[in-house]
Image 1 (cartoon, rainbow, N blue to C red):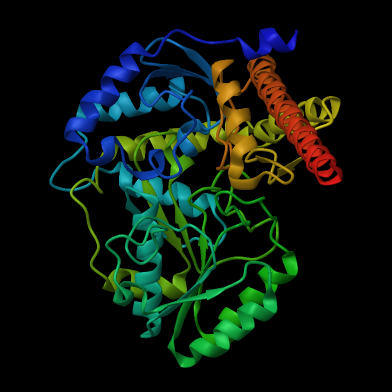
Image 2: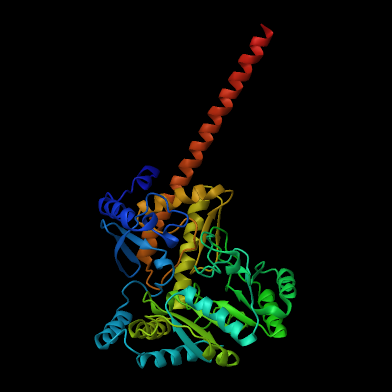
Length: 444
């Protein structure tokens, strides 16, 4: 396929999307909020989507894409997974939001306790921020101490104590939060020593996945050192498994490392797109969890819990973790080959099921935006500054179509770099000509 064809894979005009953006601007602050407004996507991206099935999604103008973002993580089995949707419909036909929870709440707690090694109990909420905040609250209730340590640059939610945007946040909101450097055990030891007898817990991601930066696997020595420090200090080791849970392992994401947390926060993939979050904990923290007051108007809703049970069952039956690893490995090999064929230097970091692509020397993600814009025009939805997600629904044909999009992205980057080189050459020529003229004038 020629570069011209790759660069010209435009979809239908975004007339419906444009109209919705205009309407949204009148009734929604900024026209959009949250992760869809943080670091705006390139202009080629649609804002509003209409449908999803398997590993494909469609925008409101009918354009089709291979989905490599999976709703930023929740879609682990593919959109509208039949068994998950059947379980959700069956429960919804009985009741969803009632005066109290349904029996499905106990059933799901039993499933999770039987699935995740460190878990002796479970509590439920709706969002990842709910879960990480609950973990911190339980750690403080258990220890009677205020201080929580987090890695610099890590994302743990959107509440004032952890949001990456400072607007509306007061110093008091973060007065009891301290920082360490991920994978740097000496930095962690220093932060623990500074916290002293005020340390309630340490919050940590399964691997370093800060937005906009190359991903970094956890160093097992760091994980073991963290476990030892928390045990020695009587503080909670809190694993934020919101993004990674059930994508890397059918237990908590640090089970393969051999390190078990005291508390863990879950959301995203645990119900394949249905709104649910969970906190799992060891028996040591059971009384503290029972002592705090947390609730929400929709936290006991049954439909998402039924969907979660079906999701966990399907993940096991389909051997989905291995399937995502296999598909992600194939995608990585092909993308690396595409970049090498064009002589482009890229870094492709993170687990195969949660990869992130950057261009070496790419300032302000300029080339990443060019790449992503061309890719989405060619029918693959990925992200220039956030890790991608591979679902278990990704087939060989989906991968083939995705690679058409990434090839278009690399072609666009090559064209941009060539354009920059030509501009630099013209600049050099003009500079040489000017210098020659000045020199000639001096001689005259």
